[in-house]
Length: 459
Image (cartoon, rainbow, N blue to C red):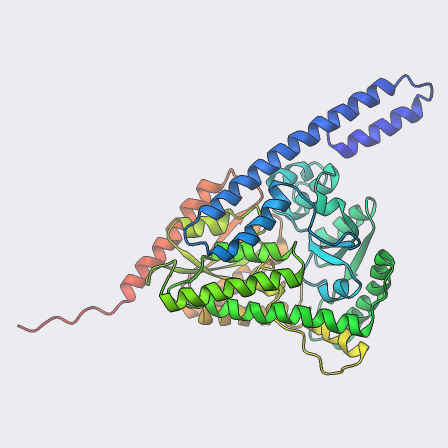
């Protein structure tokens, strides 16, 4: 029985038994809840610790990756609070379409609460329909257990309505914590839809101001845009290093870097990324590589890959591939495009943010999404990708819809694609390993066949 059901039953028993006969039962349920919480914590931290060790033990991790590993350890293994000033409020977000600049401008700190926890997923399986997205199940599992500090510390949740599951999740969260539903446009090319999104951002401002008691000013918003701009600048340099052949950094380590972005203040994250870029520059100069010349270069796209559910990137790099591109919303998509300000007024800043968080976004929630195919082709060319792993979380229909189109388009370029469907469990790891290993071997054979044959030496 879930904690939510236990709480409801306890309340009903007390109301039906005002003389206190049910008091012992209520105490027993409370003790049961405490045991259930502790079992949940033990299992969740054990699984997270296991995947963090695999991540750290993956050969070739730069020394500058340690602060990012520490953040993942603090949040998922130690279950600590986010590092922040005592008076700073935490605002939870669930998508890349929530402008972090607005949250920083009001003196708060954003944390991205999309979860990849296997243990929370199992709890959430009892709270939402069977065919719901694993991400939603994990989020609701953590919310129900009330043990995860980054969830418990949030003064406000901001949920962009990007799919039906997010819509229903927003409704469920609203019954537990202060929640704001952010409606995003269905079309990026429709000016009417975009105008509506600008107004949505304006309506979000008083919600944020109520949380902190501070007012968003022009100066504060401009400063936060500059802070994010520095992060985007460092990210662009990092992406250049990721393009290098042979590779300078493992793609799974790059994913850890982006997952850490969800929980670190942007100024701190940017500074650590700056140090990592300096280390990669030294590696390039010293020819210190983490892959071989002919190692298959793989890109992953599709549904988000969120710690600790990093089995797909680990399998790619443990079975002979090198992960060089991440087009998921937990990857560079969330930060690769800077905010371009043309109109220097406050309204101009707001419209610039609206454009930055929608126009370049390749999320399949948009009706007009040819841009996503273009972006993926661009990444394939830039990173010299030889094969694409299309990751689909079971129940994530918006990404599954686009698989066939992508396969057809990449087929014209001679780029093989493999679709892997999974959820937040470990039961399918060996099956996934076989498919991914076979896919990588296929690329190796294709590359071998494409090499020019050595000219025979005439007698």
